[in-house]
Picture 1 (spheres, one colour):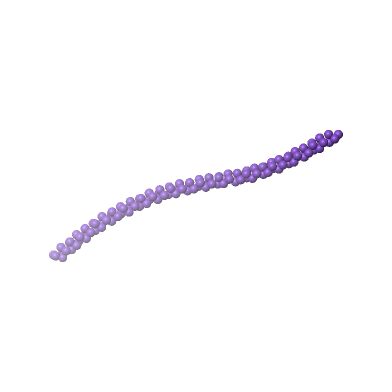
Picture 2 (tube, helix red, strand yellow):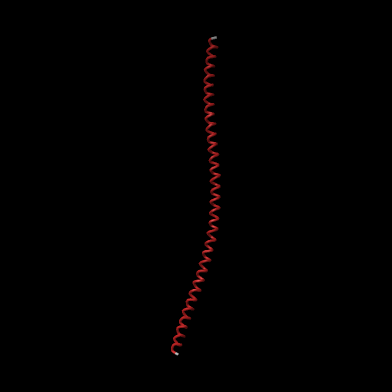
Length: 116
């Protein structure tokens, strides 16, 4: 009987140890589940940030492309205006030379008429 009691006591002690171990493992498992949930939430937040960043990058690229197109347009417009300016400047210089020649001829004619 005493041997059975000792065996029962040892079995009870073993059950208590195993029950404590189970509780410890369950707490550890719960802690790990909570950590996984927190990491999953953070992962989701990071994925959303990545999507938002990718969206912003696409928008910036689009704006840069539009700016490049506008810059090209303005560059061509500036070149055309410079060409027009050069053309008008050449015409002005030509007309100034003709004016000077005509003024010289007029002065010469007036001088001749004054002699007559």
